Length: 269
Image 1 (cartoon, one colour):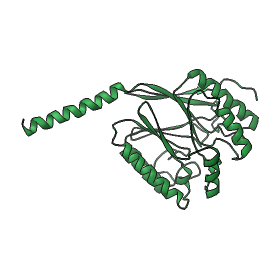
Image 2 (cartoon, rainbow, N blue to C red):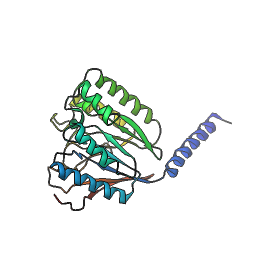
Image 3 (cartoon, rainbow, N blue to C red):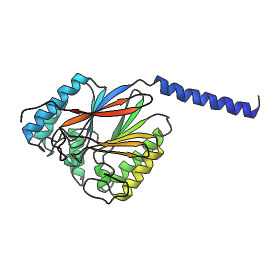
Image 4 (spheres, rainbow, N blue to C red):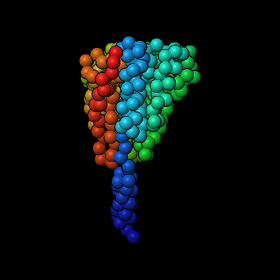
């Protein structure tokens, strides 16, 4: 067997294995909720709208739900108890990212400890039908927190670098959008600092990330960066752009990743 033939044989086997992975991936749906933020649009209103979202999502029966931060407007025992009570109505798994209203604009040891004790991990990974999802704590990007920010960034880089070799789609989600209009824009309240923004974008591009999901803006912002879908979705509390309250329904197949807006049915204030 010649070296040239052996090399060709290895190439065919690799391509066949990649094709097999793509063809055997089962399609699935998941929901992106943003800023349930109980208390932002009026506490009772937000409770009702979150309950309405849970009811509609249960009817759709996706594989799982992600909430992109700002679970409540004021992080305290009462609001978190209400949030968790409503969240427990989901008939499928629900994964949570922390927002600035959950852990603070500048997180502290005590705010992070409180969130971790009451809600759970503030950054982690999970999988669905072989597709990995990486949940980041974007507050540790927005503000540098001694010990915590460096630890989080090392975890994020290691996690993405390990997933980037798997020949599969990768989803990343958090609270803050990385940028609003262009990667070069100035830092403001609703985006990330330029230095960490550039570092994160390099990691996303390098490691086969398909989409980055976020909230925080209370506006629908949809961008495309190097074929990576960047989606900050509508909220269930209050939208600044006057769009209806609602959520995003995502469909993932071997070949495509598609999302559409689902408005909440009318609720009484």
